[in-house]
Length: 523
Image (cartoon, rainbow, N blue to C red; front, side, top):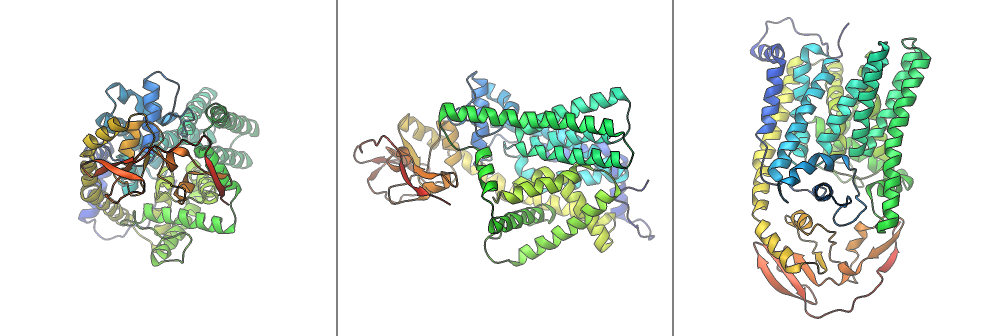
């Protein structure tokens, strides 16, 4: 049976590049070992900080302390508990076990490499190792691998769930069917405890089972039973988390959560927001499949730019490859892709390429299939694209990410001094605070808002669309303000400065106002 990556190879003598590619496939586990080694050299005692790291770290700490799960001091944990549970063992070693967190990410990535390789073997056993490298050596995978963020864990659980559920689309002995259904459903549940949008695998699985039954490759009774079982298990996992989140909202009174923000944005989507969401998703596709475009952005609400034309062309090529893929065989990740992209198109929020990383294997495979269909490329082009992605990933790590992480590590002494001085008193961050913001948050281990005086509306970004904009007292009149610049702040005087961190203290005690001020409703 022809594979999905078959191409018309030139009849010319095999060159050095072709022999090199063949060598990768003759010893696939050595090749996969090289991929693992390239990730291992990025293991680091420094923290590659980002905004959401603090949430996972805070929840993981609370798990180790034996407390009720909390996130930055609040019982409403905002994020799924799956990924913090993986990080939690590291915090038996201390409050800042960044080396251990990095090792945990690497161990998870070993499962990812094996899972993607197994997934690629279904499409082209002869080029599975190279296709795996095309996915793993991508800058987006490396970027999120270095950070304690959930993308790598979610993709690993998702791809292995697909690997186990996919054989169920064929006739199998009953015992094997049961084991695969149990294993695939269990991994799907874990993926949902990492990121709820993994539920988009359920309609893809139901569609695949229905199609196989329609084609008389499966009995309708078996297809319906398996689809119903996986659907009930997946939906129960999502519903359980939503119910828990609602219970914590009543207890803790904190109104914000990812689930609530997500559903609110989806409910309020209009034509302009949908267009912005589509442009964001097209940009994510381009940043993943085109080498060197990872940090190139365009305003989703502004006029089209040249880079967006390239992203549109890349998306068109990818859609061509997707059609080739789904015409040739049943593929759960390919069937999941339209559902996954659709739900995020409705949720018009831009996060670089982060939201598309869990779909990167099928995005890259479809892009390659589309290139072959449109430009008649041979396997050497795939090797060239893989090398280009690897060069970009290495250059970004060595030239940008690594120096930033090492420089940020120098701020810990200043962070500790600020936290010790402030204690439990009210504190806010000035808008110019950059590098040390996440470091301060995980050290305070409580929510710290941006400073927002009466005449300022910068706190609006922390509110939920459609609800009153609330500026809490600790953001309007904090006793302390942490700043990254030396510019004076009205009503405050400079208390101390350490390694670029300025700590300002109020000049006079301002009476505490019991209730927060509502400044209007944002639409």
